[in-house]
Image 1 (cartoon, helix red, strand yellow):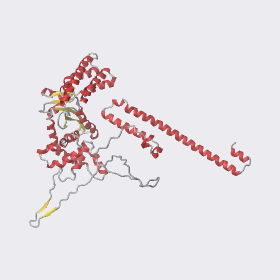
Image 2: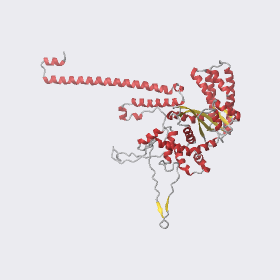
Image 3: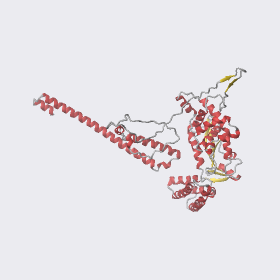
Image 4: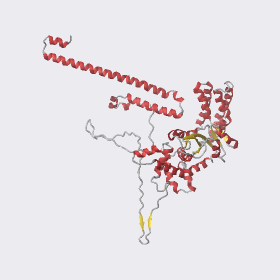
Length: 522
């Protein structure tokens, strides 16, 4: 029997009974609220525990060794995804109360300090003054004692605008002659595209790897109609205009005593068969340790036969850094000196160690690491000093490693993975050893591989070349843009300036437009 029933039977004052009833209802509601809050709190605790566990997992796999099993591009995508997820989880762990109190911004960040923003970027200043210049505590006037300055990076997306060219016409009353300023020559006579727009389209397609339909969509979002057929026409005319510059770069490249070479497959549309077929983009790059600006030249060919490399390098004599592709071998009988890539040798042992933890592979990796440490030490010194450093340190290391490889080869089964990795190094030993007897020869082929990698990644966007002519046009434009990047030039700025100057530049001064002239003159 409850309390209200007892009070009613005892004939207590109705007002007392009503008050007791109200208190009991209030108590019941309080219990309901408490139960609901307890459930909510338990749910939040569960969510925090789950997010904390997930956060620990992402941190563990981010800094653990699992990422070593990925390729370079996979690792970058992996780390990008992990960093995005970490930020999202940390944001979810911040409670609304922390945000309201301003505590979220005070929490210590786990990442390293922010890099300063480039000094050459334009600054837009915003001054934030207090609402009142009088002290809220005593009413006296405030005196500035300093400033707290912070910077935020902002961006303005592609901004379309119009150049209006006005040419007044003047007439002579005496002889009725009419005079007006001449229309300056342009890459596309009478075209609506200014050099800056043409450069933006070319860089978007060949550096940022955006198909033309995406560029068309970017213009449409801002109310600018850029028909895909018009964009394609512009690209074709840009390619023709830039071809002499690309050919001149190839001439200058073949004046260098040492080159890197590599190739990557691309797909080419085969309309007759209704499918695509293999073509190849061959890359030739100057040696970073030689004097002069850096140059890379891309040569589009429909196959991977060594005849293409021989045709490009016809008449050239020097040292050629390559991988072990047999297509280059015929050139070494004609006077070209082969240089072997130590990074490819290392890759064989790295894959072996990753597969089964081979102690022989681990020892080979350790020895190769010492050789790269010597190169790191000599990176910024003069060639004569680098030569002496290699003679004093790298040459003895190579001799010891060679003796160790010969001894290790006797202890492994013929035809095993370990034997194949050792055979790969021993077979190329004379070509591997050549760099230590020079102060300028490279140790590996990584420079040209790093140059060709963005194209290998970008082709996943554009999928295939539409024709052999399109492939050669793309190779010429990519040659110029990639060389500009190698020499510290911003490709869009360089190309815009070049397209403006090119129509009036005589052939005798074409070198002034090459994508390293500005960097060497400054």
